[in-house]
Image (cartoon, rainbow, N blue to C red; front, side, top):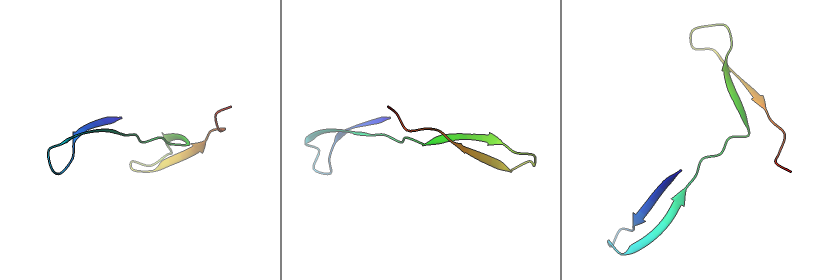
Length: 43
């Protein structure tokens, strides 16, 4: 999560940027190979 506190006009404009994944990345064999396992949605 990142908090941005100013807009382009330098006025107070507090808002949040959040990145949420729907699973887990894991190494899968090769040097750059990655696998992805989906998780169940929240209750």
